[in-house]
Amino acid sequence: MSDLLALTRRSLLLGVPFAGAYLPQMVRMYFAEAAGAAAKFLARPDGPRVGALAFDGWDMHINEGAVKGRLADLLGALDGAIAAIEANMGDAWRETVVALVTEFGRTAHINGSNGTDHGTATAALFAGGALNGERVIAHWPGLKETDLQDKRDLKPTTDLRSVLKGLLRDHLHLNQGHLEATAFSDSTAGGRVGFHSKRARHSLSNPVRTSNDARGNGR
Image 1 (spheres, one colour):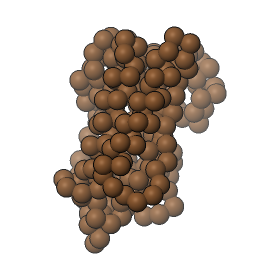
Image 2: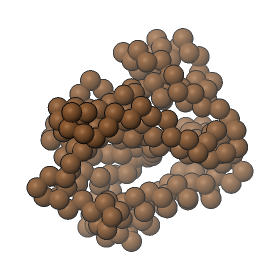
Image 3: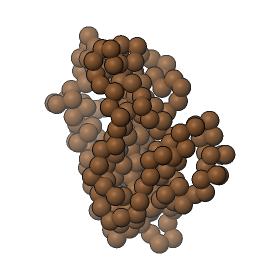
Image 4: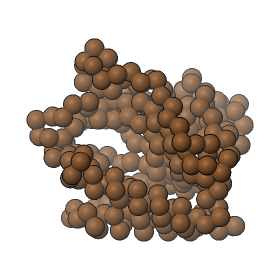
């Protein structure tokens, strides 16, 4: 499972594969170095406006460890990566958006191996100096069995493509008609979540899905 960190100024989309033995300190160092290096390129006056990286390692069917374990270590490394982006963007951080998205969610309940399996809805996180912030935007469906999709997954309430359309339109100023015709053209949501260039931190969380079947091949 590859999770995506996108950054826009300037925009960065994060996704670089991680392979090899799992050591928390190595993962933290790798995440920070990869994200920081990307930010240095984006911060240059003649640098790219959009970047993308992918950080792998989140597909934890066994021994997930949300409080103390692999998931906790990865979340700490991701926090360090965002900090490295902010530090290396310098003044350009004020006009930067970092988007963290993933392919699919996880099941609402722990499986028999102390992990979670492929699910449907998940959360998206946005951060950066160009966002109007410190908000949670959600239509929370609930975690009761009767509220879950197929009695196992968080139910999606927002199409992630609509959120990304809003980012492309309001931050990078792409034409709405062009977005509807060529970007995620099979999405009907149409960018109803907007982004405004203000110098404040921002976070957005939503149960989102990326396609009609976001579970992937495994469960």
